[in-house]
Amino acid sequence: MGKGKRKVPGLNQSSTADISFILLIFFLVTTSMDTDSGLPRRLPDWNPDEIEQEVKVKERNVMTVQVNKFNEIHVKNGVINRSIDISELKEIAKYFIANPDNNPDLPAFEDYEIEGYGVVQTTVKHVIALQTDRDTNYDVYFQVQHELTKAYSELRDEWAQKTFGKKYAQCDEKTEQPVVRGYYSNKISESEPRQYGTAQ
Amino acid sequence: MSKFRSNGKREMPELNTSSLPDLIFTVLFFFMMVTSMRDVTVNLEIKTPVGGSEIEKLERKSLVSHIYIGPPSKDYRATLGSAPRIQLNEFFATPDAVRDFVHAERESMFEKDKPFMKMSLKIDQNVHMGIVTDVKQELRKAKAQNVVYSATKDDKRK
Image (spheres, rainbow over the protein chains, first blue to last red):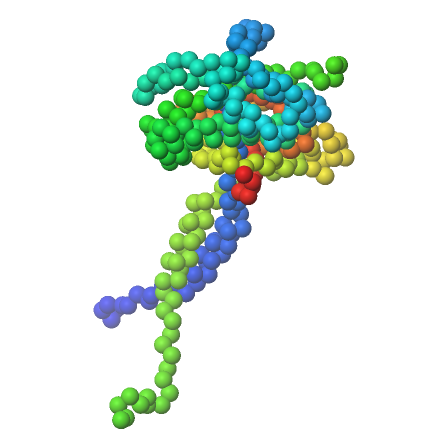
């Protein structure tokens, strides 16, 4: 009855491009490619029994950075005890952490074993205590954190350059970076905000 | 001599558009992959602090939960005032609610990802530390200790 083979007409594809264009434009509009960025930190463990109990550390190992409600930064360690400008903070912190002159008022060098590297002499027990007031501006707090982090990364760069002959970022992620991080490990402690700077 | 002479009008060959859909589809797929549809509207006015070299990019967005702190945006000023507020998901919250929020966020993650949960704190520059500290204490109690102080990176700054 039929006339043998019938030809299937080809599907008209001329509108595929238009359809995908519409989809494309939809996704173009809804895309927010803003990559989130920030300063990573690890908060200390919460241990209710230890809130009041201050960890005993030798005085020479501590540097306190106080930011009061007027956003003034006060630094106190073995060699310095005054209000400073934020631009000075990095160098002060670096000098404190590294203690290049082996100053007896700055953190002591102690034997410290880094896994996969060996025993080194470093200021492993140093602590930077960051204290803020409830009325301290967040931006100032953030900038202080930023400067302290920068102090650490510059020291790491210097040490990595000396030890491995390259900057920290170029070191091997699995083997070398942990060693550098172990030598200058981040010891910023944030205590609860206190009411000070008002009744002095 | 007449070998190279064109004989009259020459027709321009038509452009072959048969591969155009494929091309567009490729671009489309790219955008589909990178799209993360914003699931929360932030009702706060937040201008995060500006940092320099130490600012790191956040990888693996699925691990990140956001906590917003800042003054309410203009539409909410009339009812809420301009004192800084905390926003979790769609709602304004108090510091006490942070812990429940963390637990809920953690429950929604894959088991293997749970230890790597990160809290991104989007905090306005002019907020005072009091409210920030309250939130941080709650995060410590909830064992969500990996935080990121969200900031914008200024490449020019040293």
